Image (cartoon, rainbow, N blue to C red; front, side, top):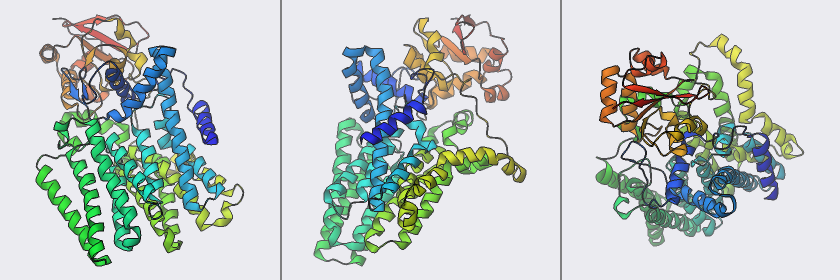
Amino acid sequence: MVAVLGLAAAFAIKVLWIKTGVLDAMSTDDAMRLVEVRDLINGQAWSDLHQYRLDPPGLLMHWSRLIDLPLALSILLLKPLLGTHQAELVTLTLWPLLLFAVALALVAAIARQMSGGAPTAMLGALVLAMLAMPALAHFRPGSIDHHNAQIVLVLAMMLFALQIERSAFKAACAGVAASASLAVGVEMLPAIATVSVAVAGLFIWRGAPVARQVSAFAGALAASSLGFALLLLPLSTLAAPVMDALGGPLLLLTVGGGAGLILMVGLDRLRSSPPLRLVAAMGVAAALLAASYLLFGKSLMFPYAQLDPLVVSLWLDNVQETISLPKMLRLGPEEALGFYACPVIALGVAVAALLRSDPSDRFRWVIVILTLASLLGVSLWEMRGAAGAAMVAAPVFAAGVAVLWPSLAIGGNLVLLAFVVSPAMFATLSGTAKPLIAAVFKWEPLVFDDPATMCRSVSDATPMRRLPKGRVMAPTDIGPAILVETDHEVFAAPYHRNNDGNLAFFQLMLAPGLLAHQILLDRQVDYVVTCRTAPNRLVMGRAPNGLEAMLFRGEAPGFLEPVDVGPSAKIAVWRVRR
């Protein structure tokens, strides 16, 4: 463990060195998490997830207190020694570093389990994990949102699931890790669902020899899911029909599914046969689907379905982490190598290892294949899923190579091979391959604003600290930074539940003078903020006479009074005249 911590520290110090401070290293999600933690420390109720300064009079967030708790405890423990500000900075730095160390330890343990203890497989897996570029952004200093914790919990679930056939205790730990991940967020639901189906399949296949372990997994999944729900949610919201957080649908699947699996084990004791177990499993699945439809079918909707088309076109469709593989192939096919090549190669190696494995090892390869395939499938839909796939691919590839070609596990061959197939190497090769790809394919370049010009850092919002508290219409990306740095209220922020606030902002920036003034009066807005260095060109292109375009041209209408925020500020601020 000391070696793992050393590797993590070296990586954080040498590769993720931050020159502008850890607060400016935070993403918009990290900033919002810090706001949520501060609210908890300052007395907001544990079960109250409203962000009262977002889209006033407030918005119910879908995030979990399970991440807020350790962050708040760290700040409170360090505060007497360092003061509040320094306590926050230390927590922002150490929390992702600690999670990265745990992730590396889990990666090494999975590689050891899958390879029979080969040291070179463990080292190769660590090399791959430390070069898993899509995942590393979630372990940089300042990364406190929840994605890093979810990656760690899925790795833990995978490690314990590998040992289900041998230990009821490890099976129970796998169930608890799965429910903990869902209590944090639903992003890893596909991986958890596929592992749960695999466990049910194991019982159908083997029956009584694994009945105790399967019951332990099912019971732990059901009991811990209910326990997390009671810990985190008010009783009145346990059955809430939400798809983006812990609520009725997820509890039905985890508690109902766990209970159904235990029922299958009980029925098998009366009369045991694989066909009967298969029929029982199909009955449980049908019952869960029917209950889901009857209880939630008419009220459930895809989380993005509530978004106004205007918000989708001006915000969601242009968020980098939500790009799908088909869109990436249309806009910048060379970028796909760094995100998808390593997981696809690892998946192929794992399938080959499964085909050549002994019957006693097959279930373990099934677990890793299903976990990696599900995360890879998510990444095909949204690029952000590639982070989990890249980290899971690290031990899968290293262990698979060690099993398939034992000669490569001698000396440094496997470590060198891991370096060659790493996401970092493919990302580097993608740059050199771009001219060749351009000669064969024609595509529209994948272009995003330069992060250095975007207004989203905490320091970008600092000029607003000296202004009296008020309501602010500002671009979505800087909304969380304003909440962190000031006591203002904001309307826009990059969250799908904030449809109303984001819609109001875009309608304002598209509106001509008189209509814009009316929107400001109706919403009781005190300040309007734009980004000098990265204006919203989509909005200006759609409405050349709208407020965004007018302000960019220096044609501020009479109802807006310029506020002096200094010549070096990235933002421009106007006070609304009543």
